[in-house]
Length: 284
Image (cartoon, rainbow, N blue to C red):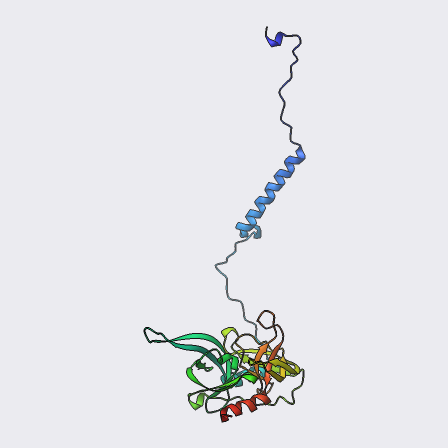
């Protein structure tokens, strides 16, 4: 007997899949439309602008007249033009002779800044700029390069003197100022080679006086100038100038947790620089 003829058999229809609600369908359509819109916006930017991205008939815009520079701008420009030729780039390397070929190889050890001290070709820089090497080169503002000889150093003041044999007409010594009469708040300007970018000008103020920092020899340098003029790696040995373009200090250190300028730089005061450099030249 077929089960369909069994009076005890009950028919159970197969289960039907649940029907989607109209709201679910609407949300799915909206989601797909949103995704499609994002794809069009990302890969076809002109589509959402409603116009082409390029115009073959585009013309140069009219340049607006610059107008007169402010007096303070003129003074800073004049200061830079007068003093930048006195600032140099110092390259330090180590010369080593190969034990087999006997050839001499120069291994770069670092770079820094410096400035022309006098008409005899003497260059002032930091001791820590020249300390790692035994061979030196000085590049002038016109990019002419000369081998340099170390005259002497004063590690306790982080100062060193080099000398180059360059034509007299290329030697433009900086004028000297004084550091004993500096005032907090007066303008300060640093010119040097931060990160190897030569002849860079940085502006700031004298932010504090009579600071004390540690020299490479471990001794204290007192009377140090604190400045907000940005001093970065490569600025070491460069000049700190007043608004008359006179030397008021030698940039030597920064206070920074990262190794880059963080708002505080230090310069050896020019009164100390004058005494130390003169003693080095005399051979004292």
